[in-house]
Length: 205
Image 1 (cartoon, rainbow, N blue to C red):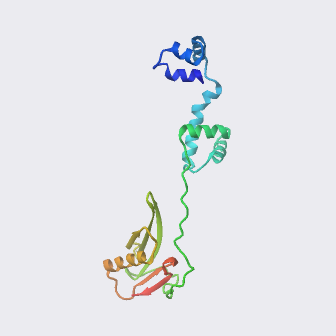
Image 2 (cartoon, rainbow, N blue to C red; image 1 turned 180 degrees about the vertical axis):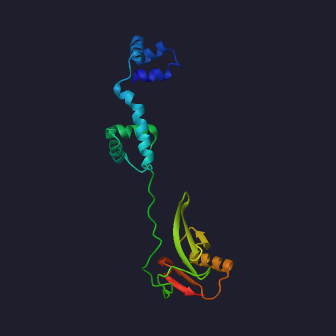
């Protein structure tokens, strides 16, 4: 380790003072420099490349144990301690999985309208049947909730709304935007299964 430290500093400081400071001889340093790298040291660049590749194709989600298994499946046998050391050296970290966010909740006392669609997911013209749903999008500032409405005939998104909370207002905002934009004729069925907003209903305009 002393010789390695000297090697890194030899272009900045004179060799003799460094040898005296570290208690080694100049001849010993030159003898160390003249040695061939050990077999283990020669393996390091290849192992680093293998670990980087395994880290990438496992989508940066695997710890040392799973990386070891993946490497073994590709013919690379390496110990856990070495994998940990090289991961730290290369600055490789697992991506943290985001917790699942539920977008439905059937345990509510809100009214449920009759299901007019009744699993008939077809429409013979635009603005006859709209279907709606909620989803969530992870961002650096937290969860972003999206309520959207789709025309069952064309597959076109006819209205949407986004917010930082999952509320009935979000769903209503998407619906009002769709109605304002499309001006559907009476008889439109709007269907959704998003129970957490008091939905799971259909209605006829």
